[in-house]
Length: 63
Image (cartoon, rainbow, N blue to C red; front, side, top):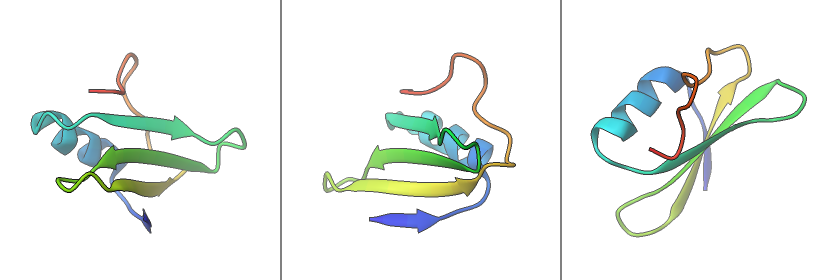
């Protein structure tokens, strides 16, 4: 399932604080960030953020 979202940096911080592994990717065109993680039931969730949002800090990802 995929959802449009806002607040990429805050979302990453919340996932990291809860020990949830994630994968954050910027599409090659640079117009969108995709953030993937699994929910408690094992379903893969995709959150799509505008490409203009600040990306993850250097070295971040797969928390």
